[in-house]
Length: 127
Image (tube, rainbow, N blue to C red; front, side, top):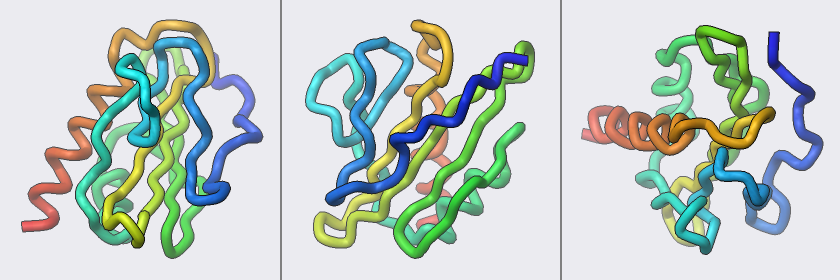
């Protein structure tokens, strides 16, 4: 119902994911400000992150390459869509993440909670 249009600025450009907008409904491991910043995820393969993401509810994998994964997460109640990207940074040996709501201003912390849930699940995959 409230999917919105897929953003045109997604993907990795010069080693960076798109910056978060000024709204509080986005987190990124490449953001410098405390409102949007989140720690990078553990350095795992794209296949490992894909396993975790595929096991989460209402998730669709949109794009996958050797060092990038893009998925859409749809909310249960109203069908709002969040765009979630992962970039495997071989130079710094981290997995960068960006999770952003397409519509609205506040996400009530959903994007940050999702990233932390994924972080926890990756610990189980990595061990």
